[in-house]
Length: 392
Ligand code: CMC
Image (cartoon, rainbow, N blue to C red):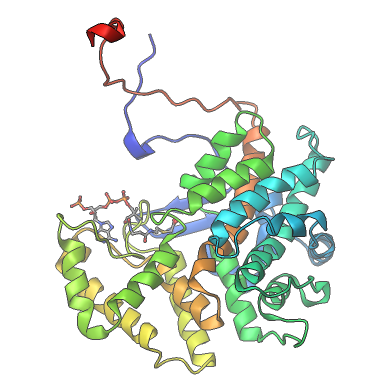
């Protein structure tokens, strides 16, 4: 008989073999295809990193130019999808819209669904990453009651995203290069993170042979939770709730109180137990963006810096190795750029779509690929007989 290991939360179960992302939680190291995240964030664009994740190697100049052209050619959504948006309530959470619209891509782009064919997989990848910024920006515009903006392919991937978010038909959006670069780095830092909850969801969904758009929609649903991608939104809401530096102590006390479910959002990580290398890069970007916009004295930024300092010195946080994670700073940066809190997780999803797709592809092309089927430790009632209704 097979022996099963009971491992709640998969703390010590490797669910797959992978060549994509390497994390050393003790050292605080993150590599994409062997390259340190620090070098990728500083020297490469997000699309360059997307190419690396997909193909396994960094592109040469002509390869990158072709990839960028291919992606930018697919930024528009099928016109019928505009109507699909209008089926949602305007006040729907944009992540609810994302779950629906990204899943619906499989209803629009089912012409290339033979996933044993490399060309079909490549085109689906291009379509997905090209359309994610358009979908996110449309979810935002729909929410605030503005008309949808068509993509501007001359701008490049990230500047075009900011144009679709903040441009209006009456006013041309002039992207600020510092903000475009900050957004691009946010995308790079979120592009993949090995077998986290949403990626595992995508793999498990895909292991049945389901199409990648449907699987990624499942990944988006998983990402939404506050313990995962929803943390940057939850972190900003927490900062707003704390409201003033004078109340930081009170919230730190609450976070340490085991009878209080409150946790310090943006702190702690399942894998990084010394520091989150993405957080270090994001912290730097955070200072650059706030400096560029003259927001160093912003109330929430000052509050966040006070919280960071107190928590880093507090015995409880030090002992449990709870450090600020990437979400702690990314929320502050996005807020400074003008992105509303409710959109943060959508932006995470936009970037992670690259990782989700690549992980899905790695799985279905693995010769050892099997449908995912975890077992359980049954702790319910032993066998018993149904008692007739009149005798219960
Ligand atoms: N505030 C207060 N206490 C905490 C926190 C926190 N943010 N995080 C963990 N702890 C405590 C926890 O209560 C536990 O205490 P004890 O050992 O006394 O029971 C101990 O630290 C270990 O934590 P854990 O919950 O067992 O660790 P985990 O690996 O299961 O959870 C986590 C990791 C990220 C879910 C958790 O730290 C958390 O909920 N943090 C806040 C939410 C957050 O910022 N999430 C974003 C994660 S990074 C982005 C991403 O990958 O999606």
